[in-house]
Image 1 (tube, one colour):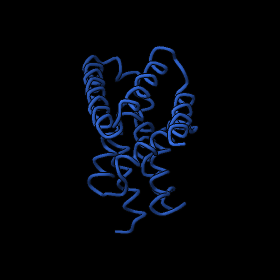
Image 2: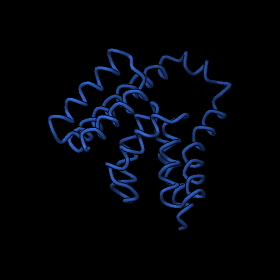
Image 3: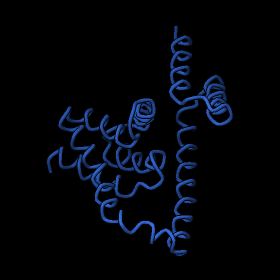
Image 4: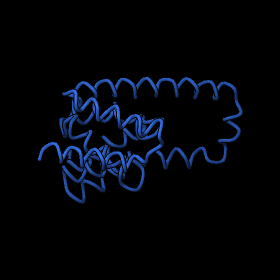
Length: 174
């Protein structure tokens, strides 16, 4: 199978099973790209995700573009991005006219409530895994706590927090 087709189908699968936005895709990306295919590491994945968070557009699309580009340049970026976007486009077109009807159905509403809870659990599981790999010192723990405070309670822009952490990282290495 060609690398481009493999990129497309892999990201199609990730795009098809990602519910809940960009954060919900992290477990799928880690399992598929870092552990199964070994196209990237969890550490690189965190870097791509951080950059994707700071760049315009949808995080999932940005991350797929970065990884596709890493593996096969511009054509890889196009294949991965097309794979990530295709399921959403097909699904949205298929249900666009019926969405209001289905959301009024109590069974559908309860199903989505259950899916939201699972997405929270998936994100929490990934956060714990990232914590174990990404926070290796007390100083990194302080940066994590200050970043969480800035994001969750002070409503500081994620771009500002990421850039501030990058500057702190550079200053510490100097």
